[in-house]
Image 1: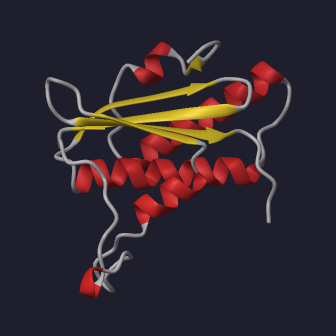
Image 2 (image 1 turned 135 degrees about the vertical axis):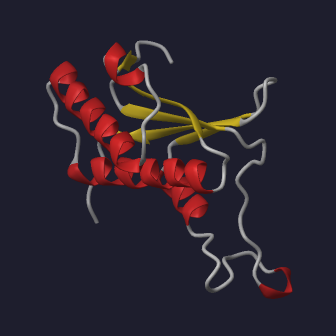
Length: 145
């Protein structure tokens, strides 16, 4: 990411212990972006970023074999949240009864479509040493509806 800024070294040098810790780092990145640009991020954009962070980290902990990496970067118009886990399985949409796309009642499946809806860009990588990395770019400014 060109002209990007990471949160402080002490914050990004360790993997978050849980989703709340990860959300705190994203909120810090939004505060740093505000200080760096002089323009406050919108509350809607912050809420969206915190929701996406919760989803990605919770899934890494619950389904991905554990969180193995985490980073937050910001630039003039966006924040990028990167989450790595131990699973080589990429996210997919759940299939309902009869092969129809969509979640099966009681089985979840709403998170990944939500991440896709809120993201400006998503990058999925399968590193050679195993696991996966998901990079989600989200706006710093979004009007509330």
